[in-house]
Length: 142
Image (cartoon, rainbow, N blue to C red; front, side, top):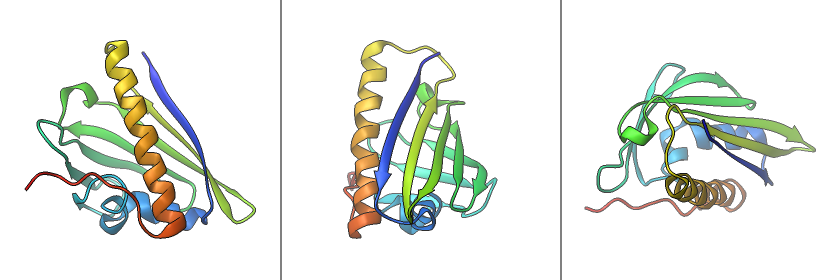
């Protein structure tokens, strides 16, 4: 199975990045403007995008300031049972983030490439949110 990996240096403390990954205010500031978040380990995050892409992630592991893990439990079939890991490392008061998405099924290179590109865009949005106070999240159609 393929895996997407991104490494990002964020000029913000790991606690700020952690909040951006685990709270409704956080995820709506960088990934999509519409999400419902159960802010606890085992809680579900329901993301709203467009078309048939509305993943639901179970927060399977939460280590404040260190690690966030999601498991896709509903939504788009390409992401069903995929695991998402945000590993946060403190470096001189800032954050080094390693993100990975482990796929549960094989997809075409075109699909992987599209998801990889999109993750790069949205991880930069996370970086902007944490560093400057405003990301570039998706705005779902009304």
